Image (cartoon, rainbow, N blue to C red; front, top):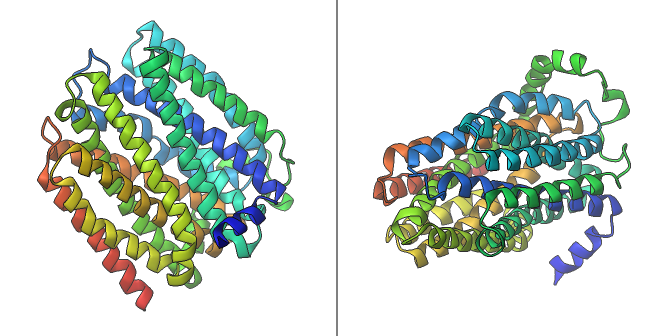
Length: 420
């Protein structure tokens, strides 16, 4: 197969292989950590979870990134990205261990959330840096393929990390703290993998470096304004449209995630462990959809163009999401998880490619950090909307129909832009 042959060629790039190793270990650890947090907040027997409590937890953990993200972008265009991966993962190792201790200590909720927030805050630097570094380790002709393989492999690693967390939680140790420690060990492995990369390889260029933090932060507003102006220029209009489309797709995914959590917690299971097992299956099925998207998107985006492929993904979701979700039954909902895994990840691969190919290297860190902030705000906003619309058992026809309408709007908007 042509895709297999191209992947083999891509893996011959040593820099790409090492950057991919950092991504797999980092995002695998993220998957473990996020499942540990979800089970601690949602599935603890002593907690009477509601959609509002889920939305509150997401807001506490994600909204502060709206403040961190812009600083991350400027710093990623001023610091060596390899150093961010090395020291960032070492810091997350220590903070994850602290979070595990807090889980066992029965401390106030706010202290636990602060510790968890610090772990995931560093993630903003790492994920944005991974995307900004990718064009430094592959040639232009293979950038679409690299965007199919690398972020999707990272998402699959996060899914596998979530699977590991479910196994540890259900079969090895009935302790969320033990799961967090597994994540800490993977963060340490990611730091060791980053240490194998040459410090200069991932950029930015030497003339852009500013080692003094205060000087870099002082220029944040100017740097962000320059990044927005860069994105607003006519050659990058498609990147701006793709970012807006992906933000709305993330909103839809977030709303359906909260609905799925509520269904697993109350509607489909007689006990918390059964609900947790169903959620684990849903995560695995969605991960299979990510894998299929990685196989299909290089061919589809090559034939249609990345922008048109985003429109096709959104249109497919608009048709299939209500058909599969409205029965509110486990089997069709699992099929929906697979379909939305394909469409959401396929659109993300295309968006990453458009942004990377349109944005200059000196601005990529800022643009991808803004991209990341939009992701978080959309997800939290979706959780808030879901909290208002979902009943206690998670069954909401209005939410399913609203999400389908948003998918249809995205498809129409992107198709119209591509026809201009």
